[in-house]
Image (cartoon, rainbow, N blue to C red):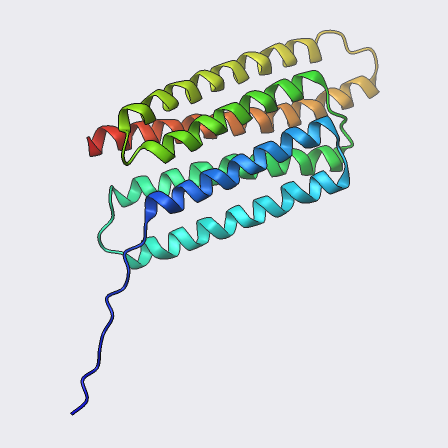
Amino acid sequence: MRWKIFRRRQRPDFYRMLLDQAGKALEGLEGLEEYLRSPTEEQARRVRQLEKEGDELRRILIDELNRTFVTPFDREDIFALSRAIDDVLDYAHTTVSEMDILRVEPNDYLRRMASLIHEAGEEIYLAVQHMRQRPALAGEHVSRAKAFENRVENVYREALAELFSSPQSLEDVVHMLKLREIYRHLSNAADRGDEAANIIGDIIVKTA
């Protein structure tokens, strides 16, 4: 009589999968910052490719989540954190895409916002990295990420104030509307980063 050997399915490491996603988002934010320094097609392609890779990481995570009964923390939090991280990368991608479509050139406000969002992305990555073994340290990175989001919003408001200060012609108005849309994409990226930081903070409290 032959006995069938059933191998127990290895439990997925959701901490690692979320860290991989955060790392990919960080790469995308680096790509966005480089694009705003040098808006070439090569840089745009890099951001598009990173966004596709980020989407694939999220699809894999969701597939594992749907197949797993026991998770290290609330499955709703895993889903929500994955989505927020993915949204940050999506907004990096749409910023580049719309700048290309609308033929908007980078300016200092866009570069400042992207730099701050990149720094927030680094803090989110470190928060995810430490939230399993060093939750107190992860909490510090959460606070720093949220502080960067506030700074992005300050630059956003400053940029809008200057943008709408003195339109001289219809061409100026059209340019203003285009640029406002790009500013909004970066503001949304910062908001999603803030959401990711809040979710990590909630996870730390629940798993303490």
